Length: 128
Image (cartoon, rainbow, N blue to C red):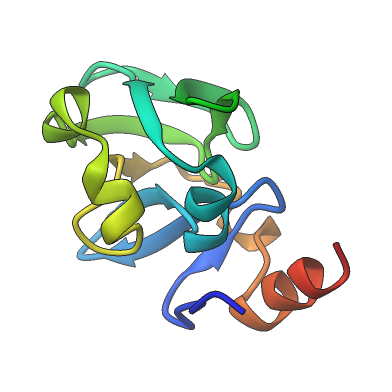
């Protein structure tokens, strides 16, 4: 079973959210990275773009498939991991650290209260 950090919350579509100093850092889980396999392309929003809870904000492409990236939070993108545009290796090698995708200032009704905790996300993976 993949390592599932308990210090963040999860969407059922495998994106994670970690609250850090008033921002929400967003990425995809180790399980999702492993399922995708070899990554070849990523499309991320621009800084200043708005993201909406459980709505697609970008795409990630592997040699096997193209998958939408859904936001685990409502808010405004304030930082994008631009290194991923040139190389997506960090997502596969360190999905919970170096492979983060975007940082968001959460809106008042951010949607964070609707996310799964680590135990519920792990249970979902076990049931798949």
